[in-house]
Image 1 (cartoon, rainbow, N blue to C red):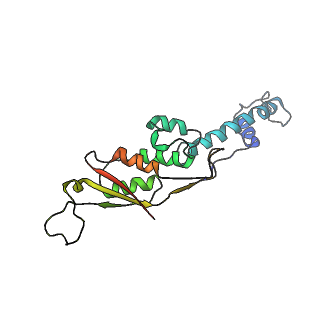
Image 2 (cartoon, rainbow, N blue to C red; image 1 turned 60 degrees about the horizontal axis):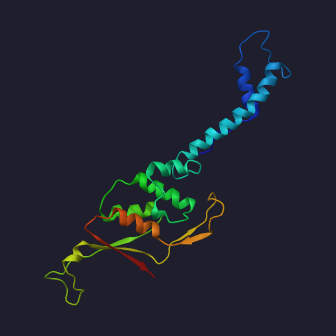
Image 3 (cartoon, rainbow, N blue to C red; image 1 turned 90 degrees about the vertical axis):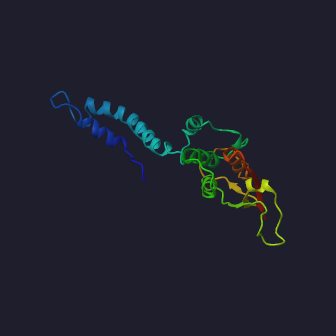
Length: 197
């Protein structure tokens, strides 16, 4: 979406067209009203640019200036984001909190991970029971409540255009995903993280 852009000349013309008709309301380029409009028009250009930027900044996936307002609204930043999260990580955490509808199914946690920028699979365990193949791992009743998140060995988050100055070029780790899953997992379950090599 291209943002509207208006020049000083556009605002000067618009302001002059709003003047009432009459002898004292000259529209000549060297007249007093035209000179006043020349002074006022740059202010309207700046305000118009800021209003157009608000359209982009109001959306959490592209926000920069309103980032702190979004975070305060959602109770962020929290320990899940770590000590020095990138702008992209902060945005994705805001989006995931806003789009989170709750749930405890595999598709729910896979889509939550995708909203945070991770690709995962989930393995569910079952307790040992009659009829299982001989030689499979024996598991007690507690395995009925265990599930495993399988993810790449390292998730690398690269610095992108628009990130805050002074941030690292890349960061490694999945602490945001682990923290969010620990916070949202059903209370009676045991969550295991498996980093695949």
